[in-house]
Image 1 (tube, helix red, strand yellow):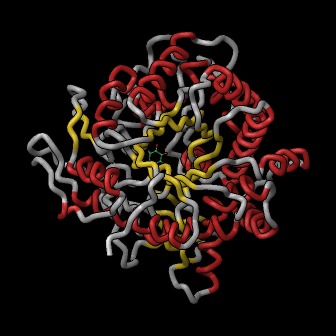
Image 2 (cartoon, protein in one colour):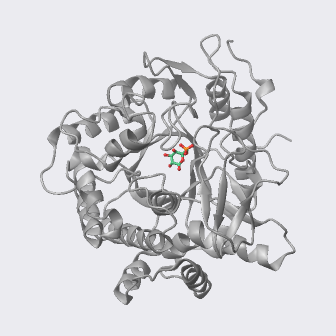
Image 3 (cartoon, protein in one colour):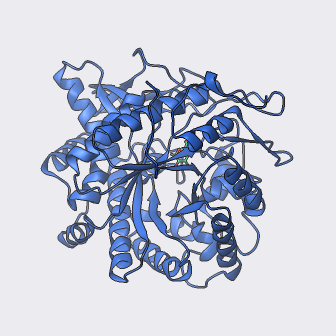
Length: 477
Ligand code: BGP
């Protein structure tokens, strides 16, 4: 039987300022840590990206034409406050007013993220979110945006506090490129969660009419051998690092006994000590019931076995299947010898993991209110043929994940929308322009857009709310 999605469901596309806008050095934008980091470590740059800074009217027109009624956009902090605080840059403010106006003109609801990986360079150099001053600067920036952009109805504080910490302090693929430092990882998670909680409190206390939430990436973690106690523990510990620590902070307002026991075990093995004060917990507790929604980004699951050897993480950034390695002393090792399809970048494709993750939030954090799937999609080396991309693999990936969402809704979860990553092709933080996700193909030389087969499929989906096969699609190519 064909599965369906509710009438009021949002069919959205997701973007992020740094990956989409380009225009990094104009109109008063301040530098971000990524500007030099890409130059020093990668083969691509944030220019031209998808030139969204100039071409957003085209992308929004296409979105409307293809049935999309929601868009995730992030504000580049350093367009508003070039150094992270102090003087406001009026051109940055004007740009976002125009962008939001165009969204509404096209009947596309903007879901606006305040921070999507792009801390201003000056704050980054001062320790980024390891420095508690950054929390205050973030809250001040958020306050400015709430006052200024009254046309925004949906705010997200942070995109993916988990992967930011991973990239910065665990696998070292994000600036400042530190590896295997689990103390910094948890401390940064904690400070970002504090910044989130303070911002939510401020928003609610000021009585703004819109909604506010946070977006977490929640990859589901399973034991490699489900009957092996040590593998079960490895999955639990991995889950604490990537999911449970930040979910606890969001919805419990403290870190549960099991979470803290896991964190202590991880830090005993890897060194480190956390600074979490009673005052911090008071703030988290005060905010825990004020999240209007949780955004879940879900791409993959992992299978874990116990591991006590030397920590080593190898990132497969070029899409050479089989190139990844991930093992943390006293935590576990990711296993790839499982019978699960995987992408060229070694992401294990498991739609049931999304169902399980949604149901876990419903079960363990019953004060979650509602969920949007704020990112999901397939990174692929698209072939551009006949002015389009025959991306049946992507359609199949999205279809299976939407079916998992439909099942979760049937089983009582309150999921209100789905934003495909990504709306149009953008570059990938640590994998460049070759890893494409978009509904709209972008020729990065000319910046022309071409709807892929998946865009036509998504249009049908948004119209009918039925999750159909790619083969049933009637499309012009
Ligand atoms: C999420 C980010 C996005 C996007 C996506 C795909 O972590 O929020 O910005 O990049 O993942 O990941 P990647 O680009 O690494 O393939």
